[in-house]
Length: 266
Image (cartoon, rainbow, N blue to C red):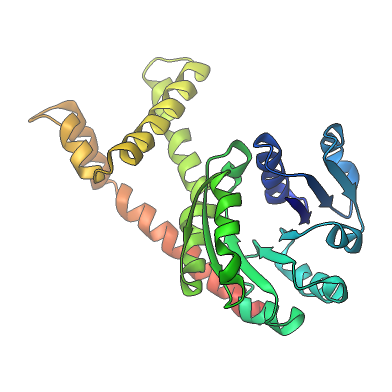
């Protein structure tokens, strides 16, 4: 595959690392206004770093956009003359609809929206995908790319805002939970390094348990809670302090903010 990433910031760099780690590409073009920030990628012979989006598009079949929302429209207008009927356009831009992309490049292009998260750098992203009518012909290609970088799910476009909160912002939410667990472990006697290791691998094991078993979380909770035991005591105290409601309210607040951003862009 010949892939270009337009806008190699945090997310773009994470996608690039994931692609390179999986050896799933023939060539990879990375564009950025300040290319010195991505000099580390020069070590890989498959990578070309440039400020020239036109050059990247001409030498690639799959174009992944990872720029700030305010820049996407201008970039699409600049590269539109160089697009062919073979290009697959994958946008990771929050709030930038397929319909809006079509008004710039045309509905005859393969257009796919993807919402990955930064865990893509280690091959563990949960990526949600949707496409226009033409792009649905290439949705399996997009799944192939992102399944090499974690897991993917095809959803309707009206759920993309929600997916952003659950999967992309969700990384930050889970990091806070891991940090809190680390702080508790320190308070209970572990040093900082030990505490973080305990928190990280317990979190990883918990998710893996659900993935492998297919069980509901409450089913696994029941296995570690005993009558009058320490686990149920801790769970109840967390719920009294609003653990579940705080998480839900925080995610809803993030969702409402995305909608505000979208309105401002319109």
